Length: 129
Image (cartoon, rainbow, N blue to C red; front, side, top):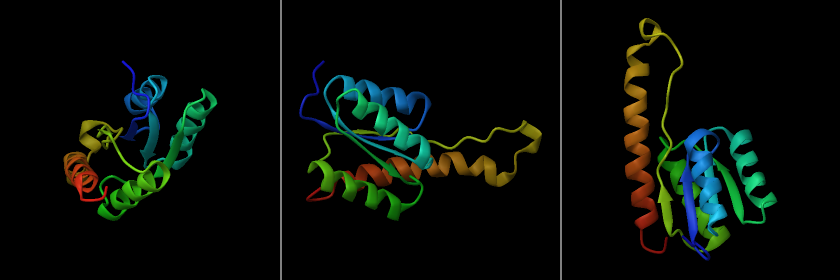
């Protein structure tokens, strides 16, 4: 599959599946906008993509925050002029025993994931984006 000339925005791109997706899209020729709440790790993803000879930028952002999503889309458009591919991979997890989770912990993952999915999709589909 060739993605030459395409621009991909990948949320949750600092590690795990998101990083693997970002790296694969780049290896297929896409320019990548890698975003994650972990700025240090998402920057490393971007560096690794560029070291392989592909274009990439990193944007530290919380996909549960509408202002952050808007900023990510704006930075993607400023860097590459458009977004062709949107990968909504980001989510929130808590590493704790089930008895240690609070009601807020139970509610955070679905809320952040839903907000991020809907908001980033909507912003990327807005006119001029």
